[in-house]
Figure 1 (tube, rainbow, N blue to C red):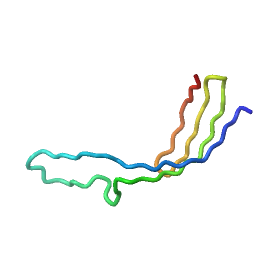
Figure 2 (cartoon, rainbow, N blue to C red):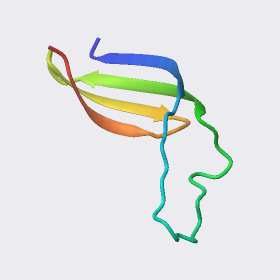
Figure 3 (cartoon, rainbow, N blue to C red):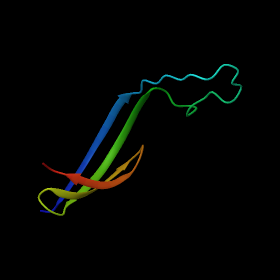
Length: 72
């Protein structure tokens, strides 16, 4: 078959360092309401154009991507 389908999840922790210049009085929240832990769920499909090259679609709760997949 030329198609592959998958479901997966990603669990992680974001290490982030924030600094502002002295005297900065603007907003200092980055993505308010979110913490350093994240959980994303994925549904995806890949169509194999050739043995080496494929088109991939990944629909996620975090970000949806469409791209090329290379198989070496």
